[in-house]
Image (tube, rainbow, N blue to C red):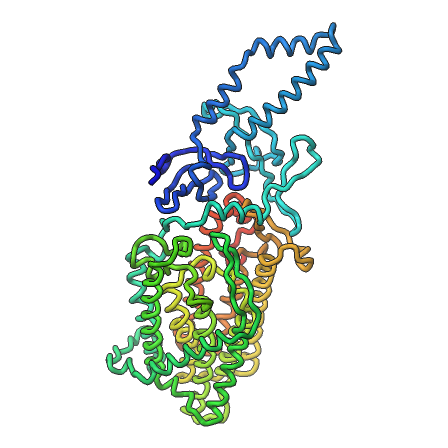
Length: 607
């Protein structure tokens, strides 16, 4: 077994993947299994490098001293002879020969010297990136350093690439980073993810507490909605344990889950590839969520035709939530056990800490599959999201039955319509979910299993559940105003997501010719025009506006219906912080320039 050569914290020279250029880096960790060093560049970029791609700083200093140890008198004599006015012809030939030798030495020096990335390009000392070497002697360093000179606030059209000036002809440009080249380099350097060091959600203690706090929050919210006075000061009594479980309810939930799995396996809809994983592999996904929604609607219509009492969901709503929680826990245990046998390169970068509780909560395996059946992708959109619509419909029917209404209330119609639009939009644009952090970065564990199967259908339907026991009458002008608010939020949400997804899929699309972006070393670009030049996360802004529109039909008698808005703001602020940290590590200086250009995160002129 090969021994480790470089220690954590040691400053060495690391080769940039796909090039012959070496940069000053700091070793942060070492993977004993993959034999890869995780190093951090001065601009914040972190990569995994082989030992053959790392050299000590002394080797570069040694080359510098060797190149400078040649006879200075000989060089001085040749320079003096070349400048002699009495021998113009020979001097010209000697000068030409020396110039050629100087170019060869210069080329060799560029390949073997260290490259220093500036920590931040300031307004005063930032120059154009021209690729020309400079002799410097900063910090008592005796090696020649090639400074990377960045032009601040670089904005290019979508079809342009990051480029440098050729040393032989300054007018000729050559591409240095393209997406294909970077992904090829990352295939060889990031075949196995390193251990997760930066723990989220409060680490091991925080994730342990969340596994109890999340189910308790669901039970608390549903118990509050059942009360006549659902105020915060009126704490609901604890329900009897035997009232929380019914085998028949659990059987209905299992039937629902496997019915959606059957719809998922139907050979209809197109098959697309996801984004490249860290090992360069692309998984295939069948896009048929909208068809599953149509089949579900037909099945519900048949049940209603045969007079099946769908409001049964309302009468046993707490028991359905407990059944879903029990199933998500069993699924999480299965996911973690199977992840212990998963190859190293298939583990999630965010759930590979080595701590059981943390990895169990966040998800140890990135894309667990049974054959071609992707468990995470299936749960992300199918049983919970479609179940949310079915629950809302059940609440609408329960309201009509309990209050002897021939038609549902206007408030209930608005809530059902707004949330139905949201779900249909997600299923119609199902392919867009493949670019989200849930699919590309987060593992599938208790967090996503509970969120998809319990939190989404039973907490997102809180407004409809509240209106059954606490009807609210609103006028048509008020309903029109609330509808306008929802339309504004939906427009921002959909147009922003469409811009991002289309740009990620095909940056050279002629429809995106008007968009500008800041190039990054990964080959991707950061949009600085359109919605993404307005705030950094415009899709989150649209989400929050829509969430407010969903709660407004419930009136202002209690804050309970607005829990979803408060939760959604906290969730998106947390997600935004995760995105910021992830993007800063991934894009380095380019992300800092983007943040300077787009200072507001979610709310314009506020945050």
